[in-house]
Each structure stands twice: as C-alpha cells, then as structure tokens.
Length: 262
View (cartoon, rainbow, N blue to C red):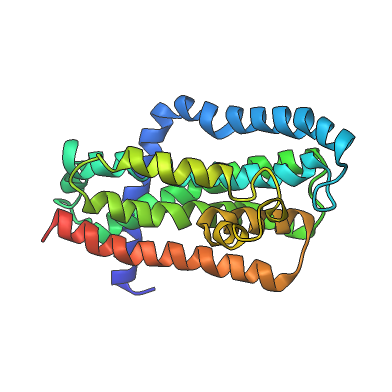
C-alpha cells in the first residue's frame, strides 16, 4: 500500500475512533431504541398479534406472522440507526459544537470526517445485525444460509439512509426541516414499507408506491436473506440500497467540503 493510502487510512480511522470513544460514554441511551423497543415489537406483534393472525387468517406469504416480521425489525432498526446518527448529530457538529471544524484544523480532510462517520454507522449496524441474527435464528426465522450475511446487509441499509442524510444535514443551516422529515418521511416509511404486512395487502394502485420507498428494499432484502427467495429481486434491492449509499457519499463529500473549508 502506498504512503498516501496509508495516511488516508490513518486519518479516517482517527475520525472513526472519535465516534467510538464518544459512544463508549453514551451507549446506555441507545439500548432502548436499538434493542429493547424492537424486541418489544417482536414480542407484542410477532407473538401477540401473530396469535390472532394464525387464528383468523393463517400464514402471511407462506410464513407465520412471527417469522414474517422478525427480519423486517432488523431492517427498521438499521434504518432508525442510520437516520438517528445523521441529522441533528451532523448539524450540531458543523454548526453548534463545530467539532467537525476542529477536526479539519488537524491533518484530517472533510472526506476523512465523512468516511469516519459512515464507518462508525456501519460498525454499529454490523453489531446490531449480529445480535438480531441470533434473535432471528432463535425464533426459527432463519431458513437460508444467506442469513449469515445479515450483519453486512444491516450495515448497507443503515448507510443507504445515513449517507444522504449526513450530506443533507451538512448542507442546511437549521433543523427546521428535520421534524417534517421525521413526521412525513420516516414515520410513514416505518409503517408502510411492507414491514408489518405484505405488499399484496395494499390496493393495486398503491403497491408501486410502496415498492418505490427506500426502506421497502431493505425490508425485502433482509427478509429474502432470512426466508429465501429469488436471486434477481434480491440483487435489485441490493442495487437500490448501494446506489443510495454511494450517491449520498458523493454528495456528502461536496457538502462537507463546502461547509468546512470552501
């Protein structure tokens, strides 16, 4: 590896380490959102509602309701991690605490700050993916060897949201739009991305809209990895998420450099 490449590795790794050290002091606050709430959903919906579903309608897309929603809860947790790490934290770092400005007074470049941030998001998502893989296997929803890829798929889902949102947060001057994004974007996405019931339950005219929503691709991809399915749709979901992550990364390099240096 060339010397510039080694220096680049060292720089973004330092940015990653900053987030890791900060998280080591604050991790207790994330236990509820990342672990307890999704497990509560799994118990209340998968077991409680699942009992009613089994009693009245039987299987959902050929699966018990518990097995149907268990993979989707990993997708939604990864999604919530991506957006939770990206809006207010990034705006704070570039405007209020100005910690990103302090970072670029060192040998770090804006690109290093961005890579370190996204690498930290991916690290957390992988850890959550490992935990949920064990839960999914414990409830019997691991029907395919592709389930072993869940930690990596969890990271991809998080990055598909984190990268564009980091870029957007570095672009804006206030957080006035953030509650609107949550209210009219994230909440409907969480509820209506085939997370709790299949696409076939929607009216015919609404199904293409649901399949256009980014979170739908994460839910469908992780569900396919757990329960099995055709390769072509899985590759299409993978491509959509990769494009979102890559496009967000490219945009983030522009917005962070403009905000921190230009």
